[in-house]
Amino acid sequence: MARTKNREYQQVLSPAYTFSRRWKMGGYIRLSKEDLKKALNGKDDSNSVKNQRDLLNDFYRKYQEEFESITEYVDDGHTGTDSDREAFQQLLADIMSRKIDCVVVKDLSCFARNYSDAGSLIDNLFVQMGVRFISLAENVDSYKDPDSVSSIIVPITNVMNDQYCYQTSKKIRQVFVYKRRNGQYIGSNPPFGYVKDAKDRHHLVIDPDAAEIVRLIFSLLLKGTSKRGISFYLNEHGILSPSVYKLEKGMTVSNKPDGNTLWSGRMIHTILTNPMYTGDLVQGKTKIVDHQQVQADEDNLIIATNTHEWVRVADTHEAIIDKATFEKVQELLLRDTRTSPQGRTVHLFSGFLKCADCGRAVTRCSGKNNVYYACATYKSRSRNACTMHSISHARLEAAVLYAIRQQVHLAVSYSEVIAQINSAPIKKTSLSDWTIRFMQKNVSLPK
Image (tube, rainbow, N blue to C red; front, side, top):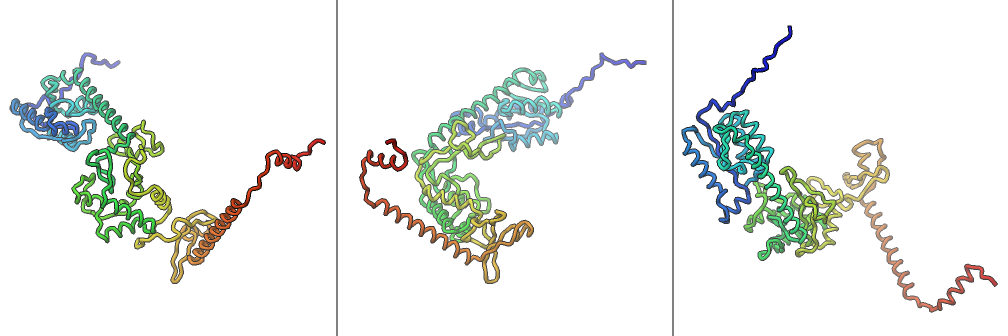
């Protein structure tokens, strides 16, 4: 017997919040960085935290019989396109733990400016969790007027908020590109050794005290001191690290020191590799991808039409380090100049020696009364991969010195020969006589 289907029956699921009469209200307040600046300047107080708090509290007092409690969540100075906001995440956590079952906001833009995030939360998560959602500006109330949530005004408003953020971000990036291409500094914290010009905050001027420290760091590396040795030297002589120095001078710092106020090899490397010390303005080293800061592409260095590329403008400010010295330091940094844990000075041949057979580095070894260099492959990897190539330091130093002297002798001899040739008298010969002699010597002329 064939089964019959009840085509007329349809199960109707009522949201969980229809059985609730008193709500645990969560009032969410958000103020973007742009709105915060406007509020501080007195240009726009309509979206300030105080204004939003007053509106939510007035709503709570007006309908107090509907609520048993109120909890406030505030994200001050956070963009609505980023859902990774501390108070916003706490609100979601309290919803999941049933501490909150009603969310009230001033308007939809305060809740989220990302269309997909706002729609997903309101239409899916809140419905499944039985959470009542109220937006005062748009008259949205998912409990008293369920159709207001599904009305066209909600998705349209979310799309408009999303598009507003996109257009605003695009315009800001275009302004940044224009300023970078025109050699204007747009960063908040100048590199150590520079400060913003009091007359023009987009121009850098030298900080004399910090600039001397930068010059010292470059000179120590050129003398053979390792990056780690430089940090030891600065710490032992009581020289303040960049963040501590700026705090002592009353300057702003991006990352305040969290207990560690000493110089490190990483700080030294950052200074030694910063081309801005040569007087060139280099910006756009990082870019934002999915709200995360990542390294930008350096290959297209001066392509300023793409906001994801480095932008370099030459000679925009006074140099602390000349370009020749900076390039020499970059060449030295390319060498493998690691030192022992207690070592501070780079050895004479560090980063230069290679095995002639396997091509790998030759390591420095110390005996009782002898220092020698041996093939790293044979010594530490496999004795079957290469053979034992070793030479004492004294013998290698003598051989290199002999080779240098030979090159100097050849250079001097060559320059003397050139000088003799240039000082020899020139015998003038007419072009016609020279042409006849050349043709008689190389060509059989007809008689």
